Image (cartoon, rainbow, N blue to C red; front, side, top):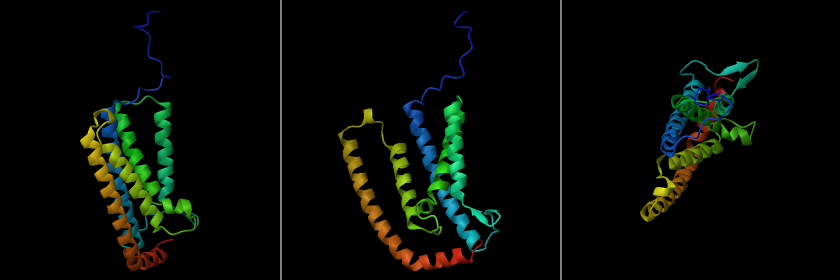
Length: 193
């Protein structure tokens, strides 16, 4: 049999994406993650405030939280990437679905830790900041082989500035949490169950 006429095997995994494409995919995940997190928080506030209809899924007396949608979506993306050869366009859609699933899951990260806790747990917001920071650095940092001394210095300054920013942000969130937190908790209690 002539090897050039043989059909390619379908059980060989697809080659990893080139580094430039990986950075692009990281940007897609980062952007989708941020937009989904913002949208999910906004929707929950609107639903809890009864400004839009209750879009929550209820199965009997159980409210199915959106972290479950994220978990199923992440499992689906993993299955597709593990068991199918995907084109560049399909890999792009997997990156979109991955960012969407990550945001839905990490938006309710506090519920991973405190199953009986409310939606407005601080741990969820902290987890989203950590994940967004990691994807932001992956998406926008130069490749390691292109890093020079000024990149490392800029990176160190950026990390230091980010840490200082997050410390200030967390302190302001604590302050805002004390002022706004009781209202959000009251909104959650009065909202659809």
